[in-house]
Image 1: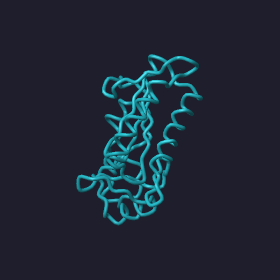
Image 2: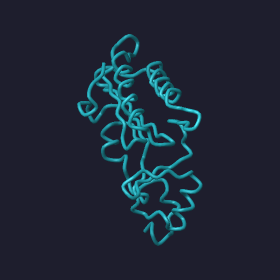
Image 3: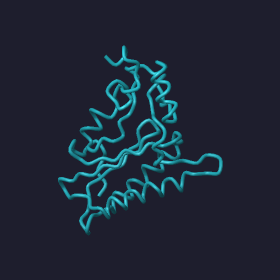
Image 4: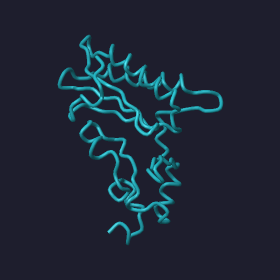
Length: 171
């Protein structure tokens, strides 16, 4: 059953999907509409799940479920992945394909916008000092809404990219 995103507890399980291009306003609205439809029927072993979907910065789709109410099962998680794949198919056009599963691009918050870089370029730019230790990046591996709230947007120096910072910058 759909629950407004902000009403889910911090303990709710979360999955963050990053797009390889920004969603249009129309795509974002449609994703939220389809997300509400999906979560209204989402169940684990016949038991309704209290869940929600929200888009952040036009690049991040977050699916969350309150497992204190009913826990997600392997099959229900598979159905949520199928939902995200369905969004990919609906939003991909010949000139503008979209992926929610491309893990080769790293997102940074720069100039009040999301900047995506292929992983090898991101590593190079960090090493060269073109991305500072305080540049914000996104930890899409968070697993709860509490972690999403507190550990999703983090400085490069607190991310896995810290190993590529020049020695003087990482101290």
